[in-house]
Amino acid sequence: VDDDETLVRVPFRIHTGEGVLEASVQTTAAPIPVVSVVDAARGLDDALIGMALRKAEADGAPATCRQGCTACCHHPVPLSAAEAHALVSLLDGMTPDRRAAVDQRFDEVRAQVEAAGLLGDLEATLDGAPFERVGAWIAARIPCPFLDGGSCTIYQDRPLACREHLVSTDPASCADPSLGPVRSVPLLARLARALTRVSAEAWPSAPSRIPLLLAPGWARERADEAGVRRGGVALLERLLGEMKG
Ligand code: SF4
Image (cartoon, rainbow, N blue to C red; front, side, top):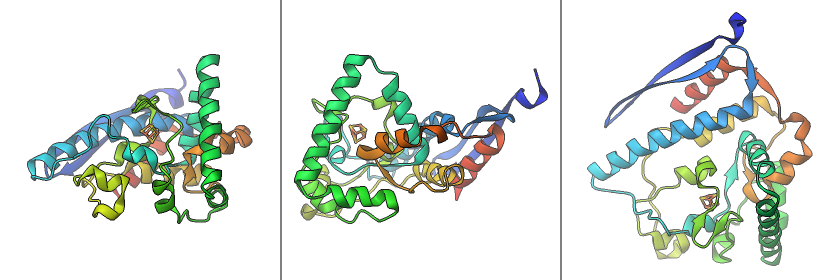
């Protein structure tokens, strides 16, 4: 094995009010696809979210998110460029029947967004404009195309933004912000933000927030850029550095 391809462990420690999370991520100094860091980010995020939830409970402000509550699945979900490319891989790996059903859901939801007069604003975000009509989106009850029967059909692969959306207030406020303020569970790190920053270095022309609904189309138009590679150790160290920042 070439020295450059020898597997190495990148250790990290995060201090929290609950203790110290000590872990390591295995990678190689050789170039790896930047998109492959999405899996590592998800694993880290899940571990850190578990700690944040235990801390919130101990602090007397536990998360009120429950299985079956789909309020945040009726919000526009932003993806990093790495997640957009990973989503295309996920779609391409589906069976033809499943893929056809998902494509149909994307078409239906897109039609709903257009009917609500929000498609132009959403598409403008691909040119860097902020999406300022979140309230109108929530009011129109526009679902995520992966929501089916009250469940996320890509739960293991759901975006970091979905993982990190945890609240300690009445879930009714997530569905209707006029009912009261929404208070987020304090997170120990924000992997979604870290991955967005890492993505910006790999895909400099990508928007920082790619709407999930438009992500497959955006990534497919840039399929030739999906395989961008960076040294594995450097990539992981960047992600971990941004995570703490
Ligand atoms: S990807 Fe899953 S968790 Fe995220 S908004 Fe869609 S259905 Fe909800």
